[in-house]
Length: 242
Image 1 (cartoon, rainbow, N blue to C red):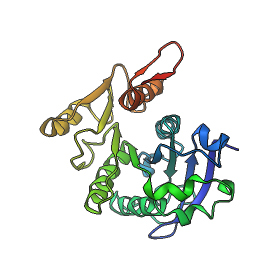
Image 2 (image 1 turned 90 degrees about the horizontal axis):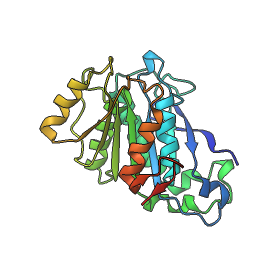
Image 3 (image 1 turned 45 degrees about the vertical axis):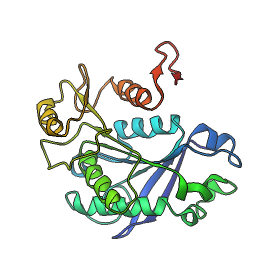
Image 4 (image 1 turned 120 degrees about the horizontal axis):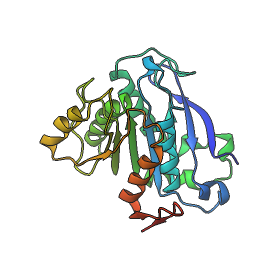
């Protein structure tokens, strides 16, 4: 079975295109494997070429999958085959809240042919949710997490990469949020992220030499997240030790 399953799900203004990234255990033992949780990844700005296949978004999804999460990446309005038009983050946030509700309903997973015979979709309502956003996706994710908190569906943890604090008014986030930024980001200056994080007493993890798109630094994002979940990463093998 493929690591990634493409699908469409209903949104507020039409169909939303998505891609499920599956842990090895889901693919290898569909009848018995229980995922660690479900995760949702939000991509960068759609009017600047951002899609769910952005390299940072893919890195986040694959890292979640490595941790045992069934992870969904979706295209925002007007991107790929997702219907609707760009709404500067508001409609996109509403869409992702709807996506989370869809993910939490086991009935919805039964319509995905590639997952026929899998037992774990019956458990999704009880599985914890993790979220991650990159750039514009971080801005959207901050409001999604806030809304989910109000609905009693707060994610267990949020990851913010290249947080778009100099472009939009990013909402406050939980204190255990993982905030990752590039040292030489010339799109979102590190100083603006520190100004946003300081009053919240958030820790900002800075990747030395990394630009906004983390060229040749994607593995650093992966390793920081793995350490936050599991402990230390063995630099010689890439294995996680917890």
